[in-house]
View 1 (cartoon, helix red, strand yellow):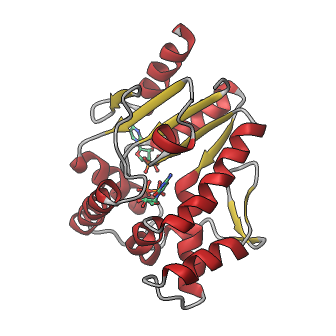
View 2 (tube, rainbow, N blue to C red; view 1 turned 120 degrees about the horizontal axis):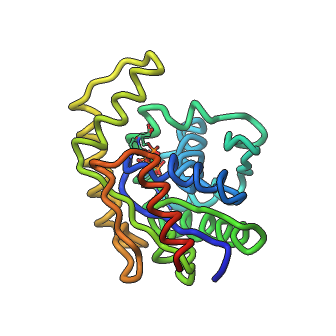
Length: 217
Ligand code: CDP
Ligand code: CDP
């Protein structure tokens, strides 16, 4: 499968940042699939849907429209929800929504349709293993839990938001566990993915490393 770059990994590993940079440099589209699971979760919370009610979640996912603009901002039924999907309420609940098979089926289909029509750099949890299983270029991006929590903490501080390092670390660790232990499409390293540990690497170093691998292929 040409013209697609698939990236998976745990939260805070730098997937979205690296994917965005790669897409810019290569003239590809970046698709942050996590933002779509977040948008579904945000919509469910807004509508007061019980997140244990799988049927209601699937019905909701079918009924909503999710779009991105060129700057990567995300729209739920035409409303820009880019900030709202990063709230702590969504952080806490997104892995629950993402564990529902029917929700995943609908979103995976959308991701695959987008990849069929565009040159894409797609990042998430199941891109290398399920969504773009046949992608020529697959990467698993990771970093230590301490470094990932530190990055999220710094991001919050930059936005002048209240942040507690231990709470952030706990939330990331909890999602790591839920995402890698769930029944449907758990986060795992694909046999043919190149693993990059960015704990000690800058964004530029990771981008260069990936580009060197792609160009050398
Ligand atoms: O904020 P962070 O980068 O940690 O996560 P994200 O990429 O925004 O994804 C949020 C959540 O959506 C993850 O913790 C997973 O539960 C879920 N997700 C998924 O199940 N499959 C994907 N392809 C992408 C995200
Ligand atoms: O998408 P994912 O949750 O994997 O990570 P992200 O949303 O891209 O966030 C990673 C954060 O760490 C961003 O604030 C980046 O600026 C920073 N960072 C990085 O992504 N990669 C490095 N090698 C160093 C820092």
